[in-house]
Image 1: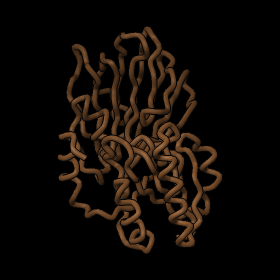
Image 2: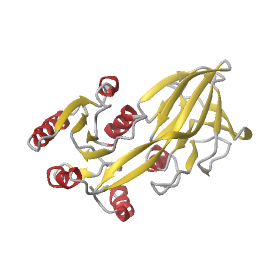
Image 3: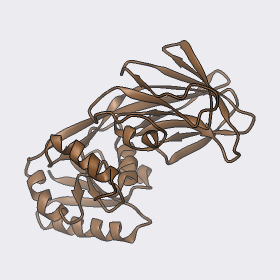
Length: 276
């Protein structure tokens, strides 16, 4: 590896300091490394063409932004955890210097994760397209009023939700907001995804596990502005009668791992119990 990008959380000073330490460490090994705030994805994209690896220094939120910046490239990401849970991160901050040399020398394995493609249409015209590693959420806005979401699968209407919102989550996102809303946990390499209502009122209250080839259409009716959220940080108001189509993205997020694949469930149990 000759060129490595390092993303950091700009609001946490410790992540920027650690990113600079990693840059110096890589330079001592003859590897060029560049730094960028994970909040400045446009600035990062101009440097990604010749980048062999991305280090994401922060928590899961930093990884989500790093994954968005990398699309559509297949650059592997290593997450270094300075956040709270770190479901997606691979190394603790103390492990980084010890484990990185082995990863840089070709050890480790690639963990490939499915993503979602969300297309927003309003007035019958497609207006925006997004890719999500965790989830796509259609929900009420600032005013505490239910939204009505007509859900269709592969063009066939299945139910009308009256709820705070609806989550469409990947296997990666199944341990996030979807889990808090009562959804199941999917094995991280699964290409299936979830449809989970948020606080439904007198409507379907169960989560659905959907095959990878499914196309979900969510038609929104709301007396007050609703919102569309992509991975929890791309947020925008939705006009009444907007339609969001969600399906599997052609792109993938690739993580470079050093810990054995079978540590997922043990790690999950520790994190769900609040251990790190």
